[in-house]
Length: 105
View: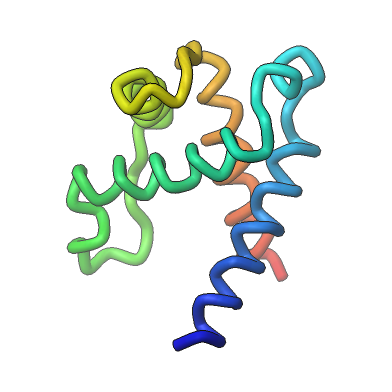
């Protein structure tokens, strides 16, 4: 199990690095690395609430604006910080771009 956890941690690190490079400068300054890690988990929570992990389909349609709004509200509710959904959307877009880049390999 330890190896699996290390693989997930390494994948998260790569995802965060990709997203940090993906964000435009004016948005990049609004998020710490810890914030980005938080939003990776918040996105998973959004997908879980939408039942996407229960789907048999390989691809799920994600409403990116809805996901970003959910994630921004969750961060506020959990006292992580107050973030604009439009800014969080950049993180969601970056994560999706990263996943797309893995599928191209």
